[in-house]
Amino acid sequence: MVARAYTVAFDGVEARPVEVQCAVSPGLPAFSIVGLPDKAVSEARERVRAALQSMAVALPSKRITLNLSPADLPKEGSHFDLPIAMALLAALEIVPADAVEHCVALGELSLDGGLVAVLGALPAAMAAAEDGRTLLCPPQCGPEAAWVGATQVIAPDTFAAAVAHFTGQTPLSPAQPAELPALSSTRDFREVKGQERAKRALEIAAAGRHHALMVGAPGSGKSMLAARMPGILPLLSPEEALETSMVHSLSGLLREGGICRERPFREPHHTASMAAIVGGGRGARPGEISLAHNGVLFLDELPEFPRQVLETLRQPIETGEVVVARANAHVRYPCRFLLIAAANPCRCGDLADPSRACSRAPVCGEDYLGRISGPLMDRIDLRIEVPPVAFTDLDLPPAGEGSREIATRVAQARARQADRFAGHPEIRVNADADGALLEEIATPDSEGRALLQKVADKIGLTARGYHRVLRVARTIADLEGSPDVRRTHVAEAVSFRIAIGSQN
Image (cartoon, rainbow, N blue to C red):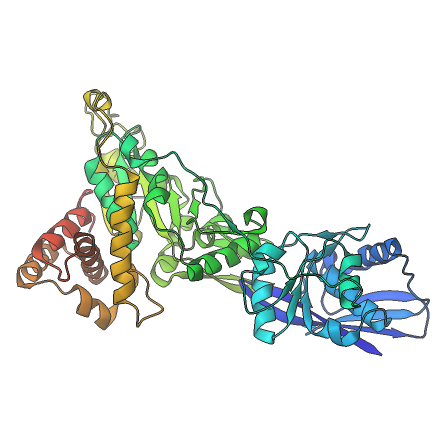
């Protein structure tokens, strides 16, 4: 008799179905697993054997063969323990074979029969829903997997409880989804003294998901401003929360097994490798740009990042996804992030102060910011000079407008964009609009068109830069509540395009 159980193997955020076939036949006692398993999967036989012994179930003195089909698909991870054990019990006729075949199982077994949390429960639940099956997983994974309402999630505490459920002795109630409250943050834009232009730029960036670069002397408040971005962004929609959580589930970043509606804020150090930023390593795991999907990616000291790492950002910024290609893996991850970058004007940071600048000024500034290539700079919509804060400004009372007021305007602008793009599910904000749709929604009035043409000729805007100015102008109009893009909106968008040096 050949019994079958089902599980998944992960290919990026996609969970590919795997059939676990178990045959118990006469012959010399053996327990073998075939089907391209990795070391963790091969070790499953010892964990399964010990877990069964803890339940007083002895393996017969026969040849036990488990095949993971399709056999040419690499199988990685300890989550194959539970489906292997379920297929084995079905082959031994301890649990009903038809009940096992109607579920997708994943989970690691401890030696005493407990179930240990594994990565990827949410994508596995999506795969189970597509196949019309129930999901069987450890209790820590149940609250996140239950967010996929199209499938029933069973999350027993132990392997013995799972067996009791399938044999009808002690049926278990389905797991319930858990939503974690957003982490309370005390960071408020009201605490930022001065820097009104930078605040305005970050408001525009949040409203339309436009990438921004802040350049200023050390201590001028660049990192302080960026750290307050999550406070003005709207909560994730249910669809966005599911997309983001699928990536975080594969990385083990979901807190307490639940899903959070707070937008991610990732701030990798400039010493991070390409695999850490873009994705890769063992199993081609998602990188920081994918972990920031639907949220903020803050790159402090942007010129200090290796040039090769910076150049790999160009394509993901345009397409909203990244393909991690390796010799043994080829996976695709989403990465629609809001890039907020910060940089000093030069290595010493004192370029604006002649009394303190180094002897190479101003050439040192050109060399330092020149590490950011023209094609990458062309993809940055908002470029902001962040001047040093005067000591007199530090003694001023807190600003009258804080993150709550800014967040309200951002939410209203996003709501206008949601209504505008209701018929285009692939587009959510102005930064995603392109082609004929962009011309339809962002073509300025005659005065605005004349101004844009004049500026484009004067500073040599590229075609990409021209369209990015239109998108920013559309977002500024949305913040104002204007149905049309006017000359004032174009003028403000252009001012942020030419703010730093002569980059276009």
